[in-house]
Amino acid sequence: MEFFVGVALALGVTVFAARSGFDRDRAFYPTLLVVIASYYDLFAILGGSGRALGLETAELVVFAAVAIVGFRTNLWFIVLGLFAHGALDLGHGRLITNPGLPAWWPMFCMAYDWTAAAALAWRLARPSAGRDYPLAPEAYRQRISPLVATELQAAKLEERSGNWTGSFRRLERAHILSQASTAEHIRVHSHMLGWAIRRQDLREALAQVLRIVGAATKTVFGLIPEGNTGGGDVGAFRSHGIPEDLAAQITASRPPVIGRRIGLLLAVGFLVSCGLGVRSVVAAPVDVRTASVEGHSIAYRMLGSGQPVIVMLAGLGDGMDSFSEVAAELAKSATVIIYDRPGYGLSEPASRPADASAAASDLSVILAQTGVRGPYILVGHSLGGLYAEYYAAHHPDQVRGLVLEESRPANFTQRCESAGLAMCVPTDDMVRMMARGVRDEVASLALTMTQVEAARPVRRKPVLVLSRPLGAKPSPMDGLWVQGQAELAARYAGAIHLTAPAGGHYIHREQRDWFVSAVRQFYAAMGDQR
Image (cartoon, rainbow, N blue to C red; front, side, top):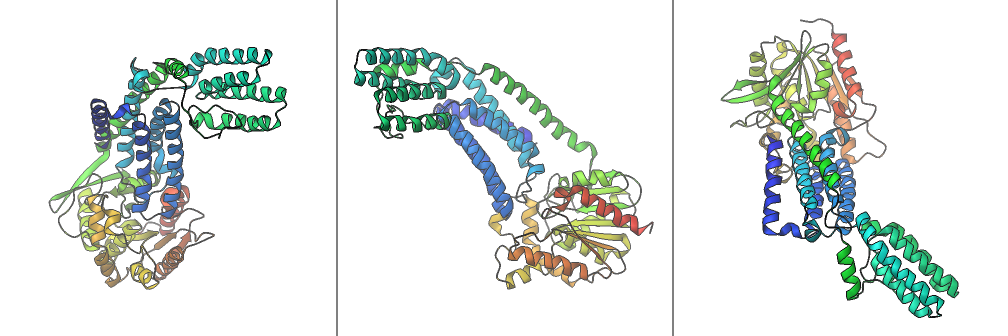
């Protein structure tokens, strides 16, 4: 559904911008690209992840640079930028772990990006594009080069007649014409350097050497002060008025239509993306089942077959998709059940509090409706670890073992606040834009922790605690968290505590092979305890 919403919204914005005339401003689509790229930063802030914020900001800087280049030179850069951002959306989860990112956003954003890219490509390929969107590079150079050559030839004639001042004036006119083309810009400054050498003007020669470097590096980014005459006696970043005859030549040299092949390529890419989007939306329900729990439906998937039976509980803000890759691997030698809690993904929201007791009740109903008999190995990540602990404490006969991956200790909030640290719990502002299930669970978080603390830990069951490494420069929060993992392992007699070789909070994503191996070794060591 998110794919089609993205396409529809992008088309709606495109039509509105075209009808209202907003997109006649060159800044419209470059600004759109920057805004789209900035949303990942917002999600990183909402998720409270400094590491994700740093990586997302680096990504934003890249796309902002593309936006500047496109705005200053050629809007086809914006088309390519939107298309590239859509491609990034598809693989974003593999590159950056952003805990604040809604599960539906990447597909929605990809659809929006590629639809906007296709729309802009179509606009640029129309015969009116030269009027609507003044463009540049190679086509501009081909048209302006003969005019520049005419001014350079006139400069030579003036110099041969002994009129050095008149010669340089012609070079200045050539410079004004050349500014939007890197090659022509460098060419004119090279002629100015030759003029200075023949004139034995050391000051002007040094100035032109610097101008050549500037022309080679800044022109492509559109950092060109219009009308600047290019001489050493004029500030390199100072704009001037353009003579009327040169302004007319520059306007006439702008190409009306460029990039038809690029437009065709992007159109094909857009159609392919439509196919991918349709496939992702249509294929999703094939192996997704639903369980009816107290009047609302819960979506779940069951992969693999046989024993053991592994039930995976995702963390706050994550649905069953968080485990999709490791679940597929584990399912090669086990039955794996993953599901969306109420208000997440494909599951309907519930009307009662989303605390540990409710999570355990829902899980009991889901497992009963799957028809797969226990006991089960519960794998809980982060908040899902609290739910797994509570379920095990109240249904010990249904639990074969516990795997707690970066599980939130029940007393973590209290210890965090006692240490005077900030961001100990997600705030309402952090989750305001998140899924309904996230908001409900945050609202019940204090109750959940109280319930788990009050519950007696399950006895005589194998427990595996998986935690991230402390890192070279840990923050006080990191130190407290890692200490809490050790104490969590001590809560269960005989528990095994393993530290991942690298990575952060999402071990099952960042250290997938290690995670799968650790879980397999854990249940292999348990033997057949059915």
